[in-house]
Image 1 (cartoon, rainbow, N blue to C red):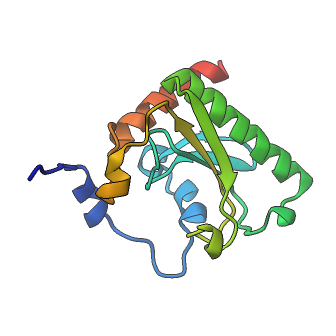
Image 2 (cartoon, rainbow, N blue to C red):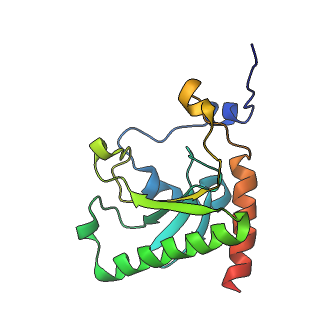
Length: 163
């Protein structure tokens, strides 16, 4: 039998957790350490962070700073800023990782897969052939890059893109 090693997972397993009832999406921007929070870009009303449970390397989340659950609760300015952040995320991933395509979307409500009750959009880079037998047969997703390495790559490229 073959073994998969994901040594970086122990850091996640042993990391301190937020208190029950708190929202990580409102707490993370207040940490004062964007690397620890995996935040790669901030705008006035939204921010962009790496997903801690990525579908693929570079899986980003675009999140309003203000806590809200529903799209229709966003102000017009927040909605425009969120779309601009999603657009920047796509440009950033294209420049940094050269994917073949993207999945962009929202999981609204627990029945749709929304696991954290705070509005956020997913921007997932996709490559031809990025799906294989592991998720189907082994119930395991294999990611070829650690989150910290992806964060560093994206922050470096974001600085270049912002000029």
